[in-house]
Length: 137
Ligand code: T46
Image 1 (cartoon, helix red, strand yellow):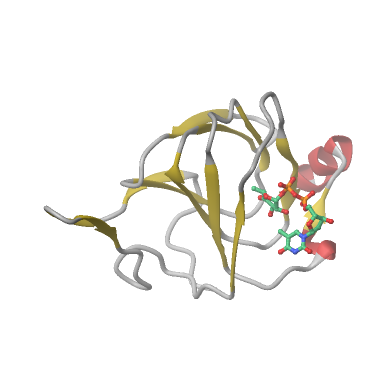
Image 2 (spheres, protein in one colour; image 1 turned 45 degrees about the vertical axis):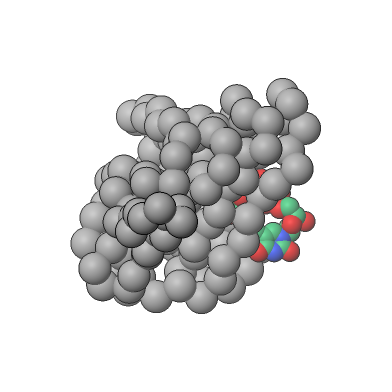
């Protein structure tokens, strides 16, 4: 994979707006430089829920909130980052190797994820101590 970024980064999603509404566009090459092999979305999230609490070894992700809002906390074992996604004009690029927790979901929040690969449980690290060991190795 060609990696243009190695730090998490907020990107602006171009939106075409007219009197009938808005159309957001996420295009390979112009916005992201990984090919999307999977799209998934999290919705119907009960109040107070947290999602995530894991890291990916190789997966690149672009995450956005077409509806509602939520926070994403990222951790590379040394630095901590917090982002809030709250409109359809912003997306968060998450490179591999970040422990993530998603929280503070508003009502009707939807989290859409474009991912660089198909689902593979062996790409996950779900134990924080293992994650720290993996980061430092
Ligand atoms: C991430 C956050 C934001 C599948 O069968 N296929 C899939 O593509 C995915 C993503 C999950 N699953 C199964 C695996 C579990 O049995 O769905 C169940 C819930 O998955 P998980 O506990 O990983 O859900 P989250 O919300 O904690 O994490 C998900 C993604 O797994 C992860 O990549 O970054 O959303």
